Image (cartoon, rainbow, N blue to C red):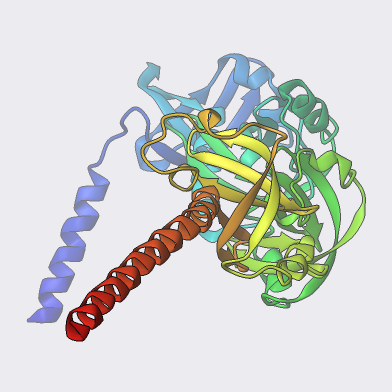
Length: 397
């Protein structure tokens, strides 16, 4: 019974297919009957005949190497054109076929080698099988990414990539939107992962400086991007990274983090920490000399050693509420401070001017208190002596 049901379903499907007619936009297979200067005639089997005319037959890229008897794919433009023949397009069918393949390439991440044909400030233009696409700057590999902030310089560097073969994958393909996006970065993802897996946090690496920006230095480590943040360049404050390294310099760095296919690197941690060494000579509670170097709304910074600046919080400048630290201290002037705390891990020392002033105040007020006590004691003793004398005189009488 099951077999009979299946046979019936197959039969119905076959009959439905046999009665199916052509619709605009359909893709059909046909055999070339003849090729003339006026057009190409196709035998579409049960759908009758088809005709390709117009600019397409003058485009050698479309009809090159075609001959009678070849089986080709075409798209239906009109179902009834001339003498019952359907009007067909080879270009449209070819384009649809290409977009279908491109969509599949998005899924398979197939690697292709393409050459950029043009460049703008946003990226590179590429073409695959007659379809133009775009490779954004953000999708360039570490090797080709322009580590500059000036937009004109970015375009200059991207223009240098025109004509050079690049391995890319199709990142997105949308025929309706005519959007085709390529990625070189994703094409090298597996390659980068292999490199990254060879390293671990704490390893020393050697790389080439590929970019210098306000917030740090970019280093190419065997094709993987590494960033040395400005805070990790040197133990001292770095205002301008270009004074430390130049593009193309070979440097050694320490891996302090691995995230999103990128290394976080440090140059300073390969050298001894001068701050920590110097900080060993100071102790909490110690009174030190310091020169005010900066005044901020929340307090002031005082230099207590050549390479150590410490913070005097506004609450530690004086007793009571202070609106403006400038009312208490002056830049370039020296004061005595008490060390409240030492944070070696974060390179922070907290100072207090208020504590020193209180200590000095206590010193000057203590003798006055002692004198009053002594005076009171003398008066008490004198009173006792006087009472004893009075008692002795009374007893003698």
